[in-house]
Image 1: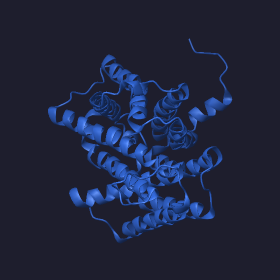
Image 2: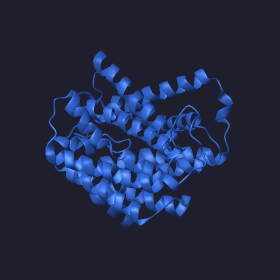
Image 3: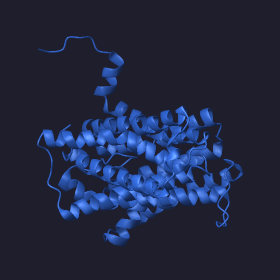
Length: 340
């Protein structure tokens, strides 16, 4: 029997429109830094917030594995692929997240988001160094353009301060130190993107992502256990709310939207729409956090996004724009993970 109950026209329109799904996913992914910044106002430390985020998101990924087994879609995991899942998961979901949240203590949310969006250029570089992939002059020009935009915003943000001083052993300004940490996060994430393709083809993106997330969660719990300060888990109620928002509103829900968008309009169009994310971050950060919003920020953002869109047009660099903050999109439009 068919369901004859009336449906909300707006929700139906979004569900059936891949472009709206991709746009909504990009917006939700991009406001993650806003919730993190708001949580920092309650003096929560990075280790505690990452642990809360992972623990709240973990049941969802465990449910994915149970669903795959129940539907007999589970793929056998060889020792090699299992080790790669663990290593890449720790690199991306633990290392990259830890560095990203540390960097956000020192720089603005919009600057952080734009640095993270440089990861396609790092994937291109890793492919050149380790995978024997050539970089064309056109690609190199796009890379230089993207980093030129970052330098413009870096120069503009020198007067911005979060009120957190860099460690005494660091001979850099807080803004410079935050940029270094965030760039290191983008590098960790680019390693994940560059070297995960074969494992994803073997296991499927959902199984791979769930296993990688569980491995990272185990590493984070071990980190927290070694610290031994479990009293840090007792946080003000808003901190739990922000952690929940980051875990589900900014990770789980947009990951489902992104996967659906890729199935409807393909990974290329979805990746292009995903570049609107920094625009959302800039606007929301200015309205909610009072962060700088100048013509230089808009100009730098336009240069970065334009460069990445031009970079994406080359076939051998399209891999770099298929993974956005929690979603492995490469291959989804080729049927790797079409079985929702």
